[in-house]
Figure (tube, rainbow, N blue to C red):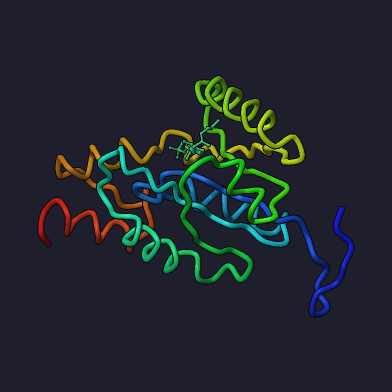
Length: 171
Ligand code: PNS
């Protein structure tokens, strides 16, 4: 437990919220909204995965996410490559945060959490339940619906919706 005081505010744990965020959805925002107050600092960390063909470049994702997350004073957007657990340790984090939407997420998340624990036992994975209104939202489905001309309003922040339209409809 960190008890030091910085600038009159109690210092809290540093948490990393990692993901692909291609694109950032209202489900991700819900998890950040629920957790920002639980930690001293929350680093939303985008995996730079050259192997995957992303819809949005890392720079585009950072730009959109910084716009959306601007109001959260203790939330920072960053990117990483290599092992998540090593990155978290380098950032001085004691928590890796992941959102769980449904039981189907659990098996993959359990494997990752246990592997990360094996790599860095001092870092705990914390799971947060997404609000039920967001439990069906995934970046993959948002991309598919947007690519086929469907309405993704309410599923992603307005800035992401506008960028999806530009990508797929040139609007
Ligand atoms: O949003 P996603 O795609 O579910 O996020 C997955 C992510 C980025 C958290 C995961 O792929 C990851 O941590 N990759 C980094 C490489 C790594 O550490 N692999 C071992 C994980 S146990």
